[in-house]
Length: 552
Image 1 (tube, rainbow, N blue to C red):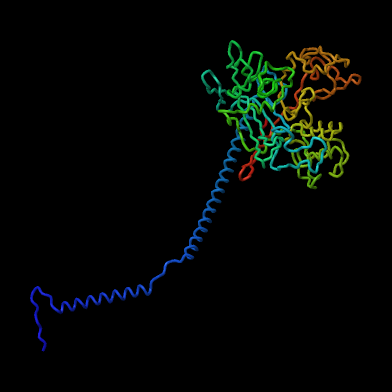
Image 2 (image 1 turned 180 degrees about the horizontal axis):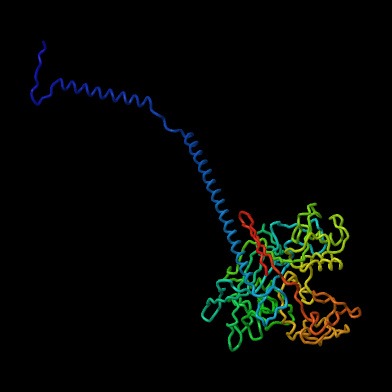
């Protein structure tokens, strides 16, 4: 039997020491086993190759995301630009439509300035810049196989100009007037409006070439009609005829006079020499002493137009539309021929009108009875499916000049109301250069020239026997049955029997139409016009087009 020895209070027994030592050994063994397990089953870190692969995959994914976001951003930007372009086109077309709806004058010739009606005028120019026609129309020698080819098929007619007096249908027009000490805004329900184009011609060839950054801008200038602004004592609004300085700082329609600039009324604007940017004998930028009567018929001057574009602090205020690739105005011609497509495709239901490919070829083939196009000898006019379409003024005139035979020129000049050359008595056809002055103009034309004391037809007056005379002045309104001019200068009225000995129209009574000294370039009344606007978004190269049709 083993004896147990009791420990004294407050002392440590051997058993306790033994148990403590055993516990320490157990803990040490457990730690050793844990360390052994950890050292034997440890997970190694990523190798450099694995890290490089992971980084590469990450970069590829990031690049794909960046490209995707860039493509989405480009598409959004392109869509936004196209939407903005469509909005600008829509706004510009509505502006032009509202302007044309407010034309103050019946659109026909022989307007009496005393009636205070204003004017309407539009012109077909050779180009919006300087040089050759941007549509590459032939001037000499016609090759119909390439007649309608363009260097840029998106580009249309860009050279037209339209001017008129307008009455606002809603809010009055607003504009600037320079006064001592600054500029103030003024209003008027009436305005003279001019809309034209200008080519930013980088290479100077007069042809729009979009590949080198050339572009065309459509300008619209609104000039308030405020004759009440003239000084009561002097009858003028400015002491000098500095038109360039005036139109750079003011939005009021004026004309030159011996006394200085005079603010226009509607009646005064009926006279061509009083209108915006018309040639009155002075070069652009110079200050004329007065209107030169030798400048008759006072044509629209493209050099003056371009010099009067706003610059400086007001730059861009007259811009209606940028990046235009077509600004085309056509007149409704009720007698214009409409051919059927059987001459080209065998499809008789396909109409071919002026402006369509090969229309000019059909005109020439019709004249020549060309069997290649299915034409047979028959009385003229022939092979028209119908008549009536929108046409360019004088649309067959340059074709007649190109082919050059007198018989063909006579044929195209009589093809329809607006097919040929302007009347000789308008003196528009002799204007040169055609890039600056257009011979093809429709104008409401004032009766004023028949009673202005000037002899506009002095070169063609005769004494009744055919001998020249300078004694006849304003013979169309003097109440006397004066001799008429030669047949070659007749107006576009039915021609009475001609005196074979003198080749002159016989006298038909006092102040008959043939006694008049002048004539509108085109005599028929204008029933309506069509304005086509086409623009292009430079980045996406997407084009948009709209047409405005207004009846008068």
